[in-house]
Length: 363
Image 1 (cartoon, rainbow, N blue to C red):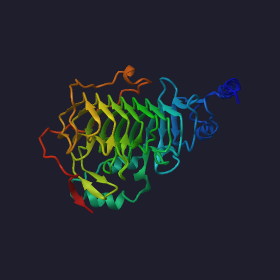
Image 2: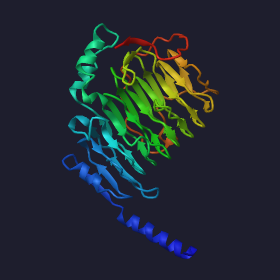
Image 3: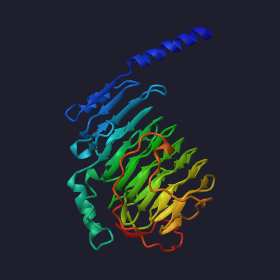
Image 4: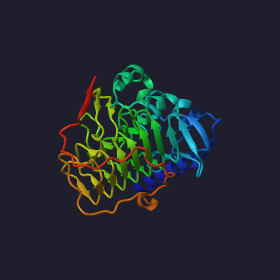
């Protein structure tokens, strides 16, 4: 095939894709899952104000030049509530191996009173661990994440922007795909407790985390997968992390209780070739842990129980910090201002660098 013929074929393919692109709108009384199943590359699905059940994306895929977008209507309060329905007990929103999909401008939560009841437990109190184990630990709901990529970070080209993820029993977003994916201007809070609840739990190559705000969680940006997976060639900038790990919490993987102050606000291990800059990390347990082989500069890390964890690179340069990331910094829309942190900031004290998380109970 000569160059001229090739150009004609590509032009035809592009025009065919664009001709199929459609804008669709649904409301709370419509079948959201059915609408998602019909999406094609280039389509945009807009949700009107209201409360919707959770949904599954499966292998939904657009293309690099024709993304699929699922978004809340501009200015509308669009809530995806796992208590109203969900694909399974691992995510209010789930996905397998999506590609070139944008999720934007929605609120993801779990309003089941069971969660608030469980959160009344303080695992540092006498008898609380036993109550947690007998009444809550065996309940399937305890594994529920806000957004769960169950394909094991094998998707690519995902954009998550202007999302508000809060009050879920477990993690905010986990197994996040890399490979050019962007997570920007999202607000995450009230995650986990008394079980472990991280803001982002991700590893892989080619991520951008920009302008995310995380507070009231057991750990914040946790950029490793617990099995040796690493973070490489990624950008972690202008994120705001505060009031992380201020209460005891149950670590699901080890079945141990970890003391308040032992969780990290920003944690990369292992990882190489990453840029960590202009992040604001305050009033948390361990502020920053980033190994050698990365660029760490111009971060504000202060007023934590321990600003830098053992073996972490220090942050070079100075930065005044931010309470709100300007929209222009990361691009894309910004979610509504989240509620302020509910946990009391710690009394700052100098602690010895721990070699591992401190256990206060073993069951």
